[in-house]
Amino acid sequence: MSTHKAELRQRRMDLALRAQAQRQTIADSAAQLQSRLQWAEIGFFAARFLRARPVLTVTGASLLWRTTRNRPLSWASGLIAVWGLLTIVRRR
Image (cartoon, rainbow, N blue to C red; front, side, top):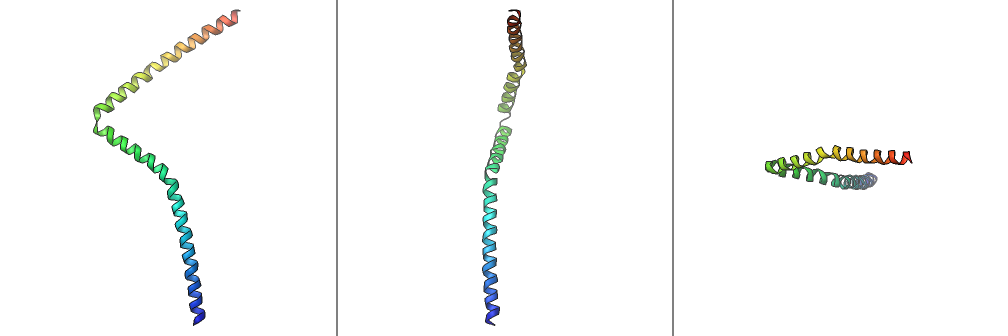
């Protein structure tokens, strides 16, 4: 009977060690996910904030649209300036 108790005691110790290792693995995985979930939480907060304030959303979207709409024009003017510079350098 004592050998049976010793086997049970050993099995209990093995299971406890295995459970501790699994808990540590889960804790490590949760720590890695924490930063990613924090960014998702910030995104959801921003979405709720903007949904509650539609005027701010429309204003921000129109400003963004306005600044990105002129960007091709600035690129075009820069390319024209570079092209002109290259033609001047080629002639000399």
